[in-house]
Image (cartoon, rainbow, N blue to C red; front, side, top):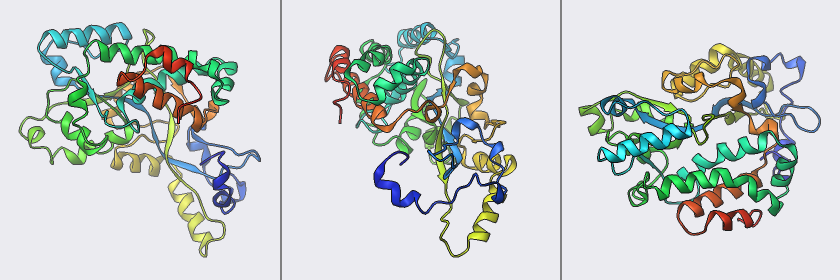
Length: 327
């Protein structure tokens, strides 16, 4: 919504939540999640955040004597090891449509990381300059290699009908070492353990980890998931603001994130145990796209490019030259 002219009438009704008179404790929220408009106002406050990664069946890794990969070299090695042990698809994920496909979940963090240290590259990418296509190459080549090497069985991935319930239930069958998905999907795991007959009969330990597409490791892409705003023209503004003062605190936000099994937006980053691997990432591998200034048109380019490359519809070279034209 931010930066899109069609939502101006909506933003016009939003209260400035950074107004000191309101007494909201915005300092309890990670700065990278707070979006300030051109006037310096905060009109939306995140109550959950999201990231990108993979559900890991830790019991399968232990059974096969393998360690969860933290670098690209290790990822390739464990995929080869699982293949040699008879696993037809060491990695899986939703791949029916470009929206929420595992290809984008893999490629987006690497693309954003490539742009993060290069303001000129980011400006070109946001402007949909075809020259920015080269910055997609590392991410696209990694996605292509994982698929072409046979670490994903695309036919089996295409049988997964959505990137939420069906991804979770497929993972709970217990034969997939690594399931690519976003943190919004992870939020539904706890409540679906009892819905899976396979998991109920043979439960296993699982966590959510970064996907290491480089030898430096993976990334924590720290983005808002759900945000609250206040209608400044509502009938009960005082009561609404009192609720916001209650909610925007370390205690309440962490508790709500724990109940929903989503990532908390607070500065102390009190993560549910399932997200424990992300707590091991150094600060320089935490990237906030909103702070960088990543725009939605840019995300459309990597989403569609990675999907089409992953499906074998176009080559990496084609995708690079087509940057700015994906719709």
